Length: 93
Image (cartoon, rainbow, N blue to C red; front, side):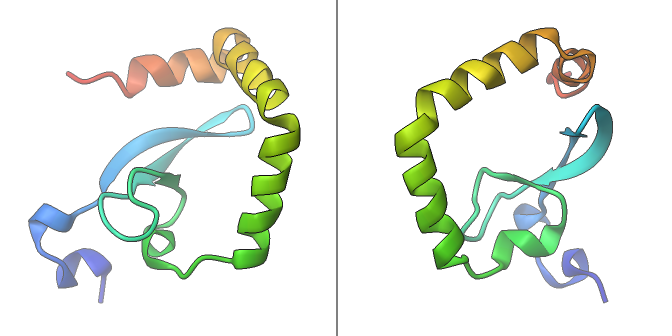
């Protein structure tokens, strides 16, 4: 049985294109659950319970390196061919 068979059509997660390294793969944008709005690889991740240790670790890392991470992400999105293709693929039609 699939998750989409259980939940109604208004809770269906949206399929989008995402990046895994330099490759373009299918991913999901969570419309419900604790990860609402986040892009995940598997539908089950939208409803998974949070890992508190990883959450606190990422909070500390963002406090320390947040600006540097943002600059690196901006550069990647501007120059990586896979990221440039994603902008085109995920654009609303």
